[in-house]
Structure formats: structure tokens, C-alpha cells
Amino acid sequence: MKHVSIVVLDFGSQYTQLIARRMREEKIYCEILPYHTKIDAIKAKNPQGIILSGGPSSVYNKDAYEVDQEVYNMGIPVLGICYGMQRIAVDFGGSVIRSDHHEYGKAELEVVKPSPLFDNVDNGSTVWMSHSDRVDVLPEGFSPIAISDNSPFAAIANEEKRVYAMQFHPEVNHSEEGYLMLRNFARKICGVTEKWEMGHFLKEQIQIIREKVGDGKVLCGLSGGVDSSVVAALLYEAIGDQLIPVFVDNGLLRKGEREQVEQVFKINLKVPLVTIDAVDNFLGKLEGVSDPETKRKIIGHTFIEEFEKEAKKHDGIKFLAQGTLYPDVIESISVNGPSEVIKSHHNVGGLPDWMDFELIEPLRELFKDEVRKMGLELGLPEGMINRHPFPGPGLAIRIMGDVNPADLDLLREADVILLDELKASGYYARTWQAFAVLLNVKSVGVMGDNRTYDNTICVRVVEAVDGMTATFAHLPHELLERISRRIINEVDGINRVVYDISSKPPATIEWE
Image (cartoon, rainbow, N blue to C red; front, side, top):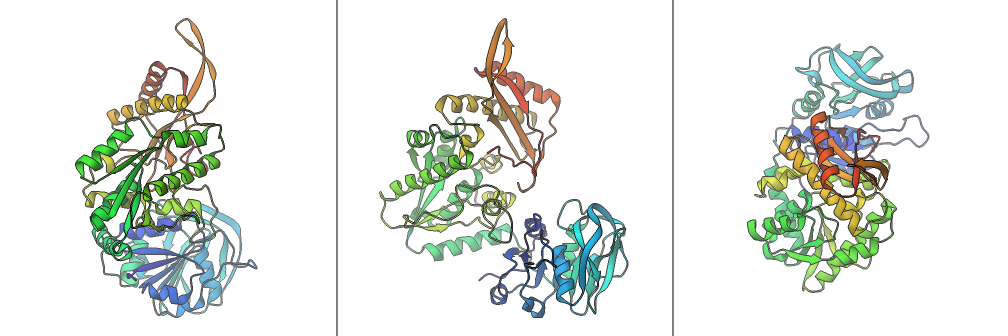
């Protein structure tokens, strides 16, 4: 098993994934494990440090989440964040109570005792608090190393045992120098010297794939998006012609997408791509279906059916590869901690019992920006690597209500206008994701001298780092006006365009 520099034990915080991201940005390899992971499994990772994440629970609850106490006897440094701090306080004999003042938002951190954790951190640095419990009595051997207006124990330490804890969240962007604190913990306290690079991860994955696949064959579902394209390129690099890359035209693609995918893989990369025309099969099964979860499941199951039909044409297929990413896993199932399921993803959750394939998901622990870096290492064209995310269910979840050919054509025309205008203005490269949604809400309009009663398009453009959180893009009014005018003038059946100004959370990026 590969060496992991820092292991994060996840207690269910919405920010846990950001800890891993911050560490990897500092070229420190970090993995997240469930809080209840047994000590032998943790030791097998051979970490140099442990971080206990935040979480929504309270340590004084009857069913409070607990960590294997042997974590503290491993002889390596431990850092607790928010709930992790309260866990440490209780585990070492201190006490935690409900705070008189719920502290949520920005606070100024005052360092009151020198500690390597705060090397080169400015006094008065802004940090992000989010807690309703607080440490009341420090355990023996611990002392405060930083305070804030409402937190006499904003950060504590037992330097002798090398156990540290923070009441705030250093991993979020609002904590201005939080990245430096996490780097200090890993580099100066834990002694991590290795510098993790995407090239290292790539070589490692190629070796893992070769060992796992052996002389078998791998069926790879290719959607044309960044994730599946990188998976296909990675597998082709690892096993060559043992890969059977399959592109399914499900009728839910954007305008010209099939042709673009075939150009990149068949012509540019010389990968022997198999294209399946399954438009009638998908649209037939989606006819009359309006519930978004049902749509997703139908599409996921139909993809699997198409892959199985193709697999029967080849001997020796033992594996199915998917472009599952870490945010997909987090949103779909509580794999690492007590987090709530938000929505299902068509490429997460394993295979149906009647399928005989084993899954290969080489990107499962990566964030989107890391996948893009891998794609560049593999030689994929920059235009494909920098494409905005596109959901596996495609345009089906961007049509409110049932999916039909007429609405799909209408949405495609609106969507391509949006993307063209964003690219021409430079905003495509400056935003995370942009798309049009067909609301299937009709309203009265006037075109020329005629009354119209036509559909509404919603434009959604967001800014994000990894898709876990997002804010709507503040596009210039002139650009929004141009997008609206072109869609209404050029797409027959649309007479109104609206702009989505909700952020994630509370909204998700996609509408369904």
C-alpha cells in the first residue's frame, strides 16, 4: 500500500474535503478515511500525521462519534479541527460545554504562545469559526496557543505529545493563512519532506492498473467529458489495446459533441474508439418520465445495458472503468463519514448484481482540477481538458419535466449560444460551469406585432474551485443582454431568458 503523508479522519464536516485539497496544493499527499477506521488500517497507510476533522455532532451526545484511542499512541502528531478539537479535549480528560455565544463567521486570531503551528502566521490573522460547543476545561498538559474575542481556547497544544487543536477551520478560504497553518503542521511538526506531484500519482495509477488488469480487458465508458476522457487516456497509456473505449450517443449530448469526441480520440490520440448509437433506446425509456432521480437511474441503468451488449462482442472483458471523482462520491453516499446523501450519480455505487465486471475507478480520490492536471500530463488537448463539467445524465437533467427530441433540440441551440458568447467574451475560461436549463414554463411575449406564448430558458453560470461549493458568476449586464437577445432571436420557441443567482449551498449547481 502506498505511503500517505497525512491521514484525515472524517467526522462528517462539509469542509473535510478541503483539508485534503489544501494539503495536496502544498504538494503533501493526503487521504481521507472514516472516523471509525480501525488502528491497523490507519497504520497500514504509514502516515506521518493525523488530522481529526470537524463534524456536525457534539461530543457530549450519547452516540457521539469517537476515534480509535490508539490513534494517540502511534507516536505521530495529531491535529484536531473544530469537532476534532473537542474530541481531543474530552479524550485527554478535559471537558466541553455548549457555548453561550454561537461563534459563526470571521474572527481575529491572536497568538499568545509560540508554536511551530503558527510559524510565519500574522498576529490578528482572520480565521473562520463555525461552532456551538467549546472547550471548557483544558486537559492536563495542554495550554492555549491562540485566542479570539469569543474563544479563550481558539487553539491549544500539548507540545510534548505533539497534539494540537483548533476551534476554527483553517481549510476554508475565509481563514486567510489557514493554508500556512496546515503546511506548518505537515512540514514542521510532522516532518513531511516528500513533494507529491501529479506525475507521481499518474505513474502510480498506471502501475496499479497494470497489476489489477493483468491480461484481462477493460471496457471504458466515454462520455466526452473531462473525467471519462482522462480515464480513457490513462487506461490506454497503461494497457494499450486491452482497453475497449466505448462512446455511447444517448441523444442527451450537446450540439456537435459526438463529432468532437470522435475527432479527439480516433484522429488525435489514435485510440480505437467504439461508438454506439443508442439514441432511440435512451429516449424511449425516458419518455414521459419527469422525476429527476428516476431520470438519473434510468440513464445509469441504460448505460450499463449498452456496455453489457458491447462487452458480449468481445472476449476476455473483466473490468468496467468509470470516471468517478471524489465530489461525486461525497454527494452520492456517505463513504467517509456521517454526511447526508444529496443526489445520486449515475457512475457511483457499484454495478448491478447481474453484471460480471469489476469496477476500475482511477480518479475516485481526485478533485476536478487534479484530473485536469493529469489530462495534460497524458497529452490530451487543452481545449478538452479545460471544458466545463458536463453531467453523466446530460441534457436530461437540464430539462424540467419529461425529455423529448423537440425540447432537446431547443435546449441544444440555446446552450451553444450561451457557450459561444462566454468563450468570445473570455468568461468561459474564468468560470467553473455554464449551461442553459429549459424550464418548461411558458409565458406571454411579443415578437413584432404578434403575441407569443413560449418557453423560458434559465442561464446558469457559476464560479468554483472544485465544485463542492459555488457562487453565481457576476457577468456583465451587457454580456447577459447579448446572450438573452441571441437566444430569443435565434431559437424558435423561446421568448424569455432568466439568470440563476443562487449559490451552492443551498442550491446545487445542476437543477436536477
